[in-house]
Image (cartoon, rainbow, N blue to C red):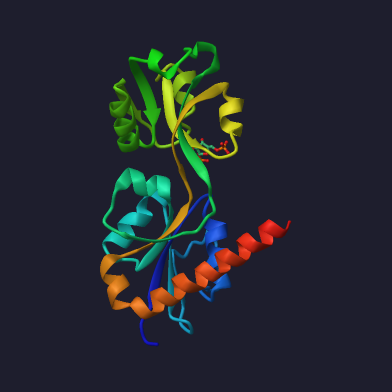
Length: 221
Ligand code: PRP
């Protein structure tokens, strides 16, 4: 084995579980922690290199081959439509992209919205969604704390990720519709997947076994 595998890991909600899962199938290195000052961490023994990246940049590293593989949410993949190979649904980080409005100004039905101004981190997904519904939309792109949009009068609605629903509740917003649900995915660079096929195929198979074991253990609970 003389080839390195470079893995892009997303900072944030998916980080810890991604690191744990990879370690369980033999892909680990010392000090792979989210706040590591060192952004590239190598395990010379097993020839694995980890890149700790900003979430939205993971598909870019993989598309350009700076990383062979990466772990990223399906929401980001849907938004960016990068040219990468989606290898496996890792079945964690489950969330959904939804449209929400303030409880106080909620109209009865979705079809009561002929026009809306929506704040979002996902303008491409939101545009497609509103176009399909025939709702005219003005999108305000924000990079975080999307729920602030309606509170400060920047937008009427939001299109954002919900996981537990806490942020919506705390900001008195209610969900009107779900665009899609998303989970973490293992992605690969197209060329890497061909050139390093044996090793990546093994990794995918080992992760599949791990996922099946996790599912079986959950079913027993
Ligand atoms: C995401 C999302 C919501 C929140 C939803 O934000 O944009 O704000 O999580 O989670 P909940 O339903 O469990 O409350 P994130 O924490 O990624 O940070 P951001 O606001 O900077 O985007």
